[in-house]
Image (tube, rainbow, N blue to C red; front, side, top):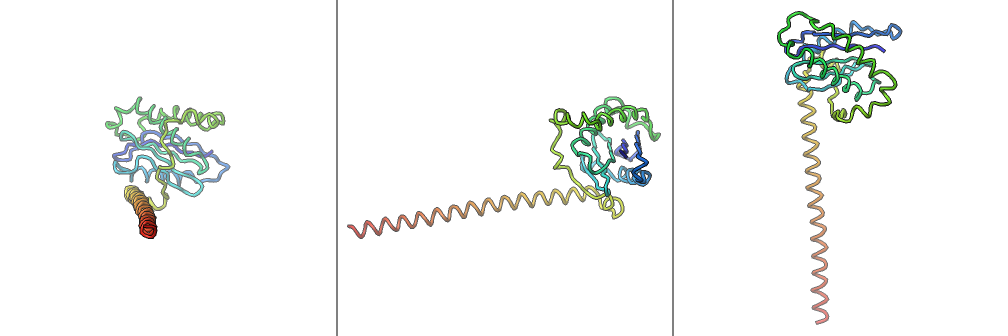
Length: 215
């Protein structure tokens, strides 16, 4: 399985540690993905969505931003998204505990490269088939991944569209959707009232007619 994990400082994209697993049989150009990962990390900022998936053909970039640090993972697009973000959450918890206070002060790239050992061990546990079967029991508190924004890596890097702008568009679409549902509910309510009023008028008219006729 081809994969890349990189942890960077959010303010300037400084790489703090990384872990690479290359599958020679896949024929993928991992250097190209590494370059994209570095470009992406330099574009991210405090206004970027804190969770996002970026599609890159048959591979996906997934990232998590927490406490001034970006945790980025590249893997095959078929890899379960819930498992990916559980993996990133795990890395964040351990990395922040070990190095959180040191992150703002380091100046040298890959200052915490020894964290690669933990990355490799954690990644193996999530890739392991038994971990896949038992995943539901360790993911009960993870937020719904369907709400995580999805974009295309080429749009973000080559066309220069910012993730903030994409997030704004997504928020606008969500607002429009809510407004549409609200308007539809209002129209349905008015329609119901109109039908009730029409039926009431009919019965009142009928009662008046019957009463007048028989009296």
